[in-house]
Image (cartoon, rainbow, N blue to C red; front, side, top):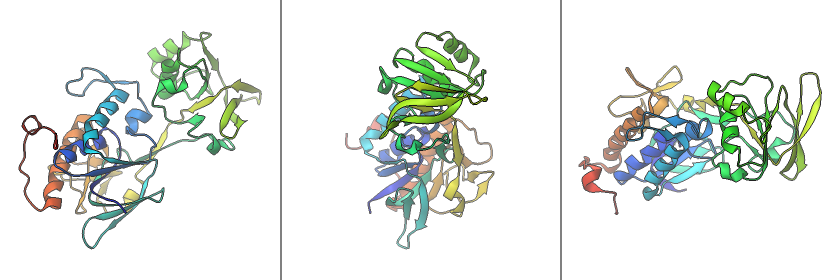
Length: 333
């Protein structure tokens, strides 16, 4: 059972920056997340959306921000345990914690940082028979790279920002896009909906008002998506991939049972250190709460630094002699 100095629960932007902050202090990290990709909401909900309040970046796409944070953390060789939720957290008599995941993995850590955002995320799966055989190969709830679908026939189901944004991003990449929605009106940003409407008949067809009814294929290879309208009329849409964007469900899950002080589904922390009510466990980002908290990514970045600096003396048993990165550089470089 492998061990690290710090287990970071949550691979969103704040969790990734915590890897960097811990690494600068010589603390090793493992990052655990219920989603199969890093990036949290930035990757799952709005990878193409611009973010305007990251210092030094007047405008940066969410996916690009995650790429840069991953690269910033890379010199410290974090271990990523993705697609598995932390189910158990046991305090060890010799100090530290043992974490157990939904995939059966176990990990020991000297300290724990909760960077779980609004909690563990998971996709809202459409209730289609046999869909599990296609997941990860032909059925996708998250998309990281448009290039993965070059020259493919793609069906996109959903009417929100994720569905519309990815339809726009894949136009000219995919050979054809079926846009499936159960009503005529889309819930995405009006400008995006107007841009998508202008592409009707140019490699994009609107399949409305229809909803998913079934999948046709063999051994995880998708041949067609079956849809049905409210009157029971059916259509067969040739497609090699289905992107199903019905939102993500989030919940604190087992975190509720870890004996932490909670306030309205958030973990109460000390502002200066981000320490929770349980020794050795810290919380940062959207999951953490204290009086006057500003729910901004940059606030979470500052909290990541505060938690890392509080953890160092706890694990190393000595005060931290702080040096700026401009004078110190990267450890080992």
